[in-house]
Picture 1 (spheres, rainbow, N blue to C red):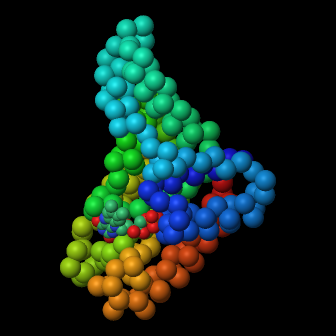
Picture 2: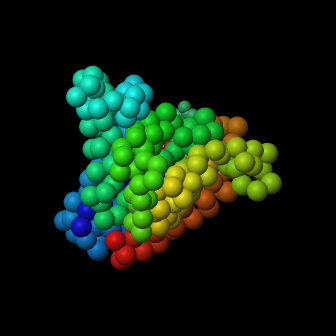
Picture 3: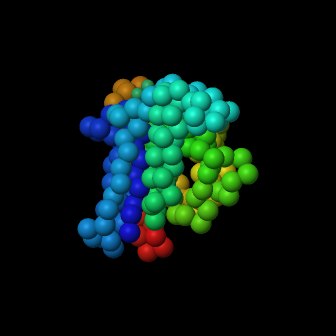
Length: 214
Ligand SMILES: Cc1cc2nc3c(=O)[nH]c(=O)nc-3n(C[C@H](O)[C@H](O)[C@H](O)COP(=O)(O)O)c2cc1C
């Protein structure tokens, strides 16, 4: 079986989203040892920012009239969608950046939606497929906090993955990853440690479930 893993963090060392996704992948591999893990690191191997406009304009032209840039953007969008379609299960590791998703994550989603197989009127591309979204935030945005509602990433990702693409979605969240990094957050050390442990446990549980259902 094939697990597809996407990482959207712009760093590799010390990445909290990768740590959580690693736990899910380890649980998967304990049930499917030796199986393929297909990976894409959109925070490091960045998708070209102009691919999306080229792919969109290509939609209105017959193939024979498309520019080399448009052809290449259409091929990239197809390759990104193929990675999802070919996977038996999917893990996404996505940090919160500037209260939303990064340009890299948005480009990835936007490009996939340009493919006719994922566009308006097409059946949901992830219908019935199990997806674990591992998302992390430097701050905390829970009910009653000063910035409640400022996380504009997680709800958007739920909307796309579950509502638009039809995935069977599990979300594992970790907050306060900047505690211990930003001294202004030192008073939250205990709360952050508890959140870290809870996220690790939730990732383990999500990974076990993913490995069983595939
Ligand atoms: C450029 C940048 C913008 C960020 N914006 C936010 C933000 O708006 N809210 C927040 O809670 N954390 C923010 N963070 C913190 C990250 O969400 C946090 O460091 C997270 O752990 C990053 O994921 P990673 O550990 O997998 O790299 C930001 C970090 C960077 C580098």
